[in-house]
Amino acid sequence: MLNKYIIFFHLILLFSCSKVAKHAEVEPTCIAGQSACFVDMADMRIFVKFNREVLLAETPFTLTVYANKKQNIKNISGFMEGDNMYMGKVPLLFAKNGEHQFNAQGFIGSCGKQDMQWRIWITFIEQSDKSHTFSITVPSYLR
Image: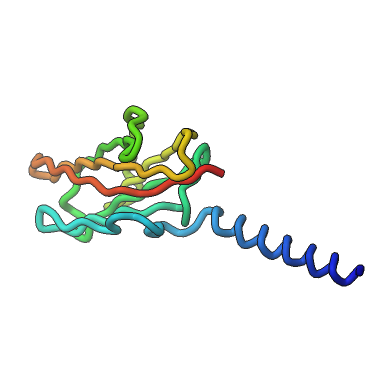
């Protein structure tokens, strides 16, 4: 009988640890369900990545945007809005992080849906002051 409890306890620990690891911070990556990891536009490939494998409500995340042509992007701005349930616009305030990379801190509030689809709008300005806008979608989940 004791062996059953020990095995059960180990299974719980194994499941819990893998769940925690899945939600821990990671190197910038594309997340499952992300509509696009990059967008080709203005003779550049723009990458959009996150520091989490899964976006959870009420858990901060970092969004990283960078291009394969480093010298072309002068500034980036953006916001998020619910795609399957409108919840207003959530601003993304980008800061330059290195020569060609921009990071924004994000935070998704809770809502009544177990899983939520978000549309992220990103506008970048080239050195020549030309402006370009694109969007991607990403899912988020309640805890």
